[in-house]
Length: 569
Ligand code: HEM
Image (cartoon, rainbow, N blue to C red):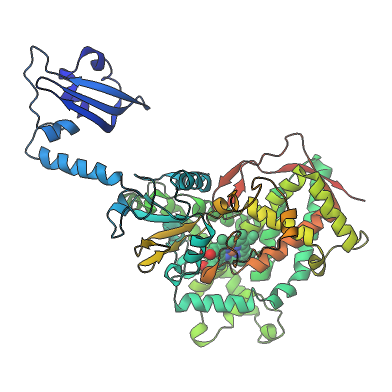
């Protein structure tokens, strides 16, 4: 439209540009005079943005263009609808420039109260969303709270401990926005995405009593140790075969088996049969949940399912139902009434034993069990991979931790759960890794405002998605001195709780929806790190260590850690 309309009236200089793809980006200046009109506009020419002055004047042999002023500004041909269209387009462009973007402009919030970038923010679809949002918040002076829009979704993000605490601890934000993949994968019936209410409360109560209680976690100590020993054996094998090893594979399978044992009471061999199928299900599920689905924010795109998310989810759910359903059936057949009383039952037994109003349908049970596999495996394995990368990069820190293990445990016996309390430096390493590489830099799953609420002085309307940029907080120089340095010593000097009470470092979230598996996850990370450090010295391979990140469902190392593990005598 732009090209067709003004082409005949342009001077030769501008004319030359027109056959190429030109996109009008924004109008900067208009200077009308009696015989001509100067427009300074930002255009994209073959995708290169630049500012150009167009001088519109009638060519001598042509009659002047029939345009009214409003239409001319937007270069719309004159029709009966043109003034309305022009006004609508002007209004749309103005709304796009509101702080926080167009969805905030339409909200009942006072538009100027929360700073934020205009237009639509596409950062969430990228692999460094936490960094882009942190950069925007600092540059717009919006660290406390920043508003932005993605499609038709209204967001706020906190990059400060005070507002983060308000959001995470407020009952107004006790719900989660549910994305299509989570819904299609049944997670709305599991704890993480279940709406705040009786059903969710029931799931939290059951899991904190039977899966995450200190007694249950301690009861699984021996099993954790066996999983750790298997990892050590796998590392030895890989080193003997290849002379180098990819750490993540060993950690991922160990972590998956750990969860499978606590939840399903079963271990798998991932090279074949059921183990292979399980690995395939988990991989596809991670990919789907980690994918940014434009359809979640643009309803039309959601309906069209252009990314094929719905289709893939539905096919995955069939396989998950068959796999988890068969495990539930096995448990139903083999269940004895005494299994829970003597504390030997796994989590499937617990769910099958629930009575009356606590009782879950088979479909709900599949959802709950399936979610545990997802939440429990990935986070732990990824955190440990970051820690091992740091051990390879900082031999001084590694050897300090090994000296601590040697002093507290010795070399003649294997380290076990009970030793962890005597390894404060090792615990400080884990805290420092959680600070520098939080597995959920945006706390993985956001919160949803269930009713209108204030955060600080800012009014947040119901339906707003609220996020906490924990990565931004843990990398803020005004909160953490030398924030880009890996220094576990900082946690020896100051004991900072990481379980949700101190929002300077809350990698497990906080408030009602804080991670229920935090103690279980930490128990595994501490023990396996101690085992891996007791048995090997970790040194770089020829490829070195690349700390580049990629945000998927969790914050992963973009290039998996490949290194050497040399047996310690
Ligand atoms: C290093 C390990 C882990 C990290 C960093 C982590 C992190 C998180 C975070 C940030 C949240 C959101 C909290 C919030 O909204 O305030 C969360 C929720 C959750 N996590 Fe974890 N997690 C870990 C391990 C685990 C494990 C081992 C399990 C279970 C086996 C688990 C199960 C869950 C569940 C079910 C939720 C949803 C809770 C709800 O919405 O009520 N997590 N986790």
